[in-house]
Image (spheres, one colour):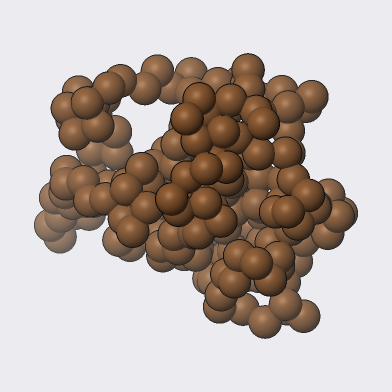
Length: 190
């Protein structure tokens, strides 16, 4: 398992080692000790989630405010997505910037998205099974989002907007300029 920092250093790509032969493969998908050694701190994941989606489904950009802010460790079991993390920490040198990484059942890559980031993905394959760990429970009162197509974010989702499938909730998210944000210094709600 190797770790690499992205252009936004707090967002980390995890490349598990795949052991394969003619019978199939084996892969360790999570090691708390190796992750904490790399980060220099521990994350106590408490919940696993899984979704199934078809081509063009875009979920996001989502996040939760404190006290239920979440760190996410995301991966694809089957299929392929473009996974996006947006820095929404007001005062951060990378505020409003994003990281986009292709994750697939084939490459087994994972993305660690810390608190203070909005997260979303779009399905690039016919279908996709997406799984992720979070370090805090879901709270409807703290649930927030940002418009996936905010021009200020300049995210290339690869798929044309007319082909995207969105939830009613995701068609009504505010622009970054009108969203509830985190403070970079304290990582609390601004």
